[in-house]
Image: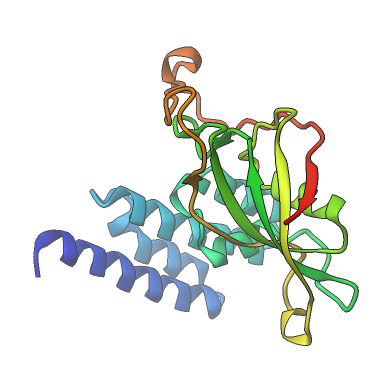
Length: 216
């Protein structure tokens, strides 16, 4: 096993152990277990693991806004971490008999997954969203805090199914995210570097405008 594999295993093992302490309500031990991996050279995996566990601790302490902020500020490292998405949804109403599972595709909107990583309008992505209307689907997607919403942004509904009892423990919101894909030729560079303009300030951009729903 090479050094990177050893480091990744260390992150996985300590994160798992820390979550066991969280489940037992021993938050101090959980934080202590995470210390050796906080400055790991496997940056993405380290930030992903520690952010989710620290956010879970905040959620269990009833500090929902802080928990959501912790995950959202590091969304670029955990784009399809279901446990992270569940934390983002923790203030939303529960899934119930009036809720549906939407699979939707979003096109034409610049997506910002962190301060310096932006995918332009010729990319698309898909989401699974638990919601009670098309309007709510839009609102739940924007809760992720990653879309600039130009007028040409479209949400295409791919499928729609009633939620089942197995889903009733979930909160409404985005349940899964899928990778970004290019669907048009470049009009600008695929990745925009915002560092010069914003001088290193870490934030997520949200500009809200109407999103058009279209069924495939």
